[in-house]
Image (cartoon, rainbow, N blue to C red; front, side, top):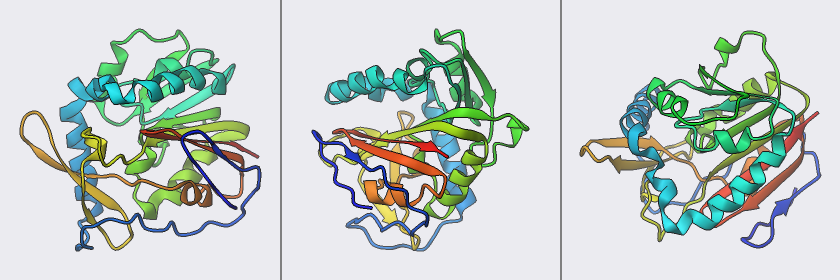
Length: 259
């Protein structure tokens, strides 16, 4: 499957790829350093986002991002018209009211109680509900299934070694014909926002990490991967069809349908 993306020309493919491939490693200037226990990194990230929750959305006020944000906010509602949608890792709920605008039902989930409380205080479409759910196992969902799924700025935090398993777990919660949309940050070297913090290290699996400093002076290691279109397509599995990739300046969007 070929893939060419630019700011003005979306990368699209109607081909179906039946196998998965190991994603190519993101080039970084830093050395490959010894791995840190995954649980340690996950805990560091959980603490990081809990501490940042009250001012997380400051990044969305950056002038450089306004064109991308307005474009995506206008486009997203059309993806889920009349659908029952599972939102993974909703965080403070920036994307929730946009995606849920015309949805039938929208379940916004996160494991971090602090960020969910920020989201709950916002005005939301009447179809939106919030629940505390583990984004890797979805165990709290029981046997509930959905015909749509959305994840904003979550893919980049999933370790490469867990990505295929996470997608399989998500797809298992989705019915045939479900629409899936992922969006996340692109790496823009000239930007000074948190997601564009210089890469501090790369582990043996190819995951890249950033050391981010919060307003309180605390420093946290955050796993942050920046996939290419080809890498993302190669991970989707056998049920995914009609994958499309749109590259904006500061964000990328991946959408597809499940058989």
